[in-house]
Length: 140
Image (cartoon, rainbow, N blue to C red; front, side, top):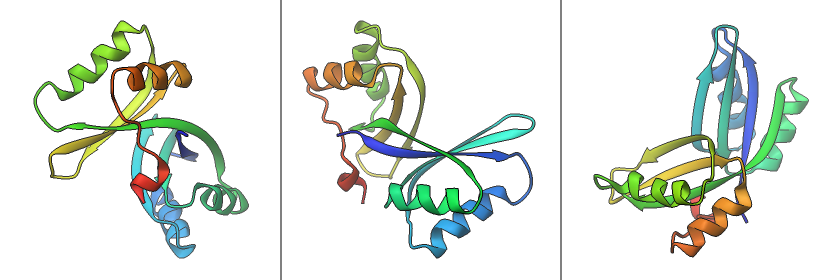
């Protein structure tokens, strides 16, 4: 199973990220990963949270434009060239990355979140190369 991600489309104006984070916090939903991209007028907040179904419902009920999709999350050694080694697998298999974000927890590994144009093919290619895909409970 892939990891479910919430995407929130917001106006690019003061306080919108605060509103989202406060609303989730008030409902006992913990943020595990966050990515924010913006344009002049709008932004997209991508979240991995402790309870994606509840987050989706809470945000939708409070007037936010919300989407759900699946992403692939992997952990790689936090060393020089670690990302290149993983991307080589993706490149060899001609899989396109729609977007990615990453975080390093200060330990020996880094966690990468990917949205691919073909999630199933990416999962198969990574598994075949011995790359373990993280599950939602791995991030809780």
